[in-house]
Amino acid sequence: MSARSAPREDRGPADSHVDSQADSHGGGHLPVMLGEVLEQLQPADGGTYLDATFGGGGYASAILARARCTLWAIDRDPQAIARGLRLAARLRAEHGEQRLHLVPGGFGDMLALLDAHGVTALDGVVLDLGLSSFQIDEAERGFSFRNDGPLDMRMSLDGPSAADLVRTLPEAELADVLYQFGEERLSRRIARAVVAARAEAPITTTLQLASIIRRVVPAEKSGLDPATRSFQALRIRVNDELRQIEQGLAQAAALLRPHGRLVVVSFHSLEDRIVKRFMQDAAGRAPSPSRHDPRGLDRPAAPPSFRLLANRALRPGDAECRTNPRARSARLRALERLDLPPDGNAR
Image (cartoon, rainbow, N blue to C red; front, top):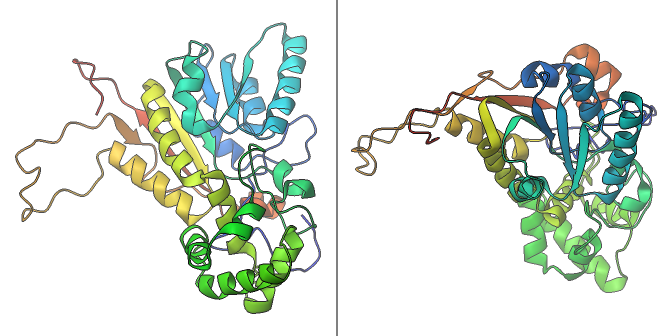
């Protein structure tokens, strides 16, 4: 991250976060809240764990260093899988056994991806949501407007790109995307400007789009770049990130053995709301039905199958935020599966 004073791309309440994961053997970035992740996950010898968002392998390396366990890792970015295979080969050469296994795909499909390898139960799952530093630092991936690059934003390198959306979405639909996924209050103004600009010339690069947005959105006192929320929105829409999170949380919980733990690090309010609601529901913290609502009043609530490991989200310490400014918006939530009831039916 540049040390010069400039409009910030990855800061603020709706920041376009990067997760700062990196291969601990030389990626140059730091895994966010690594100590807290390990404390909540509690990897143990002989266990089987899943890093469902491998990224650069920062969490994976730390988990394998903490315990003599088996770790599966999922990522839909082919470049992340390639990095992971190199790390797995190096670890095997160093320790004489294969403990890291890479699986290409999206974490929203983890049940099927792991089942194909005969893995049906886990002792822990970690999810670090959003982008990796590798993705945002590579201009050709099109996630960032710090450097010019093609307007791409695809994590899996296939399917429609951000440029495709900017080129084809009707004005009203584009405004809805910016508002829903970027919480951008000026979404209609931006959509109008984009549609006008694309009528003159195709919008194909990150700086081209950022410039259009900056012309119609005032600078913020916080220093947050006016294009940040719109870039976040397009990225989420291109990669269907919120649906992936909802599916991934449910499937991770289903895979956990008794006393298995799910640890999730999120970076903006859209992600955190989904994680918070899911974990509260799983732990039986959902609001009770109204006494005026006849639905469900005659059905006794089943005992919860999970417990929250902390009532509130954990936040990074001041020292980490000074060392790694990209960590400052992180929130960590964690859940533990309880012993299954005698009938074996989880809630």
